Image (cartoon, rainbow, N blue to C red):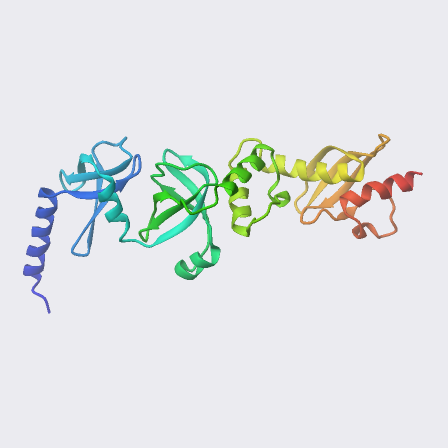
Length: 277
């Protein structure tokens, strides 16, 4: 059984060495920095609270650390290479140098981490929406390493153009499209002005009606379905209950002899126009 006095003395020496030495750590703006010594994690609040980046720090006391200088690229690379690398695709900025990203290979992340989900990547020094990057996972946080030069830049440009044209995620189509690309695009639309959930629903309903020859006037959320007000090509007003999941008809607003659910919103337009005739 270890001598408790010797153990405490060793910890005291380690803490003294920490205060007299320097350590490299990543820091997000307003966050904290950590140092590992002999299996013990020490957490400090940087005196320079607005600093964001990779720095060489020195403990000022047991709670705060002073930024000595910014770390060099070789120092950063050496630090990052101790952690596993993953390829992710950037979706959108969250705040400062932190971006939301999604794995480029879901099965790889699931096999290695037992889960698949969007993650915040810190200290993204370069890169743009939909660009593929290499990031490192330290067991708690994700850190940007570099833009993945092996990735096809055409994918990024195609996704950017689709976002500019306000293409809905379910309508996204191009050669080489993967489920992961569709997911990261969906994430980007959720954080893009003009792609609010209400806007997405409006576009979906409007498109279905236009394809059938009708026009959307307004709609209201009723839980599992929408109450949709629309008009036929000749201006006849209709109100229908439409299922959210697949746009099937719950109630057409006209008598269909109990066959309402045999139709979706697009086909309903033709049915109503034929019924009016």
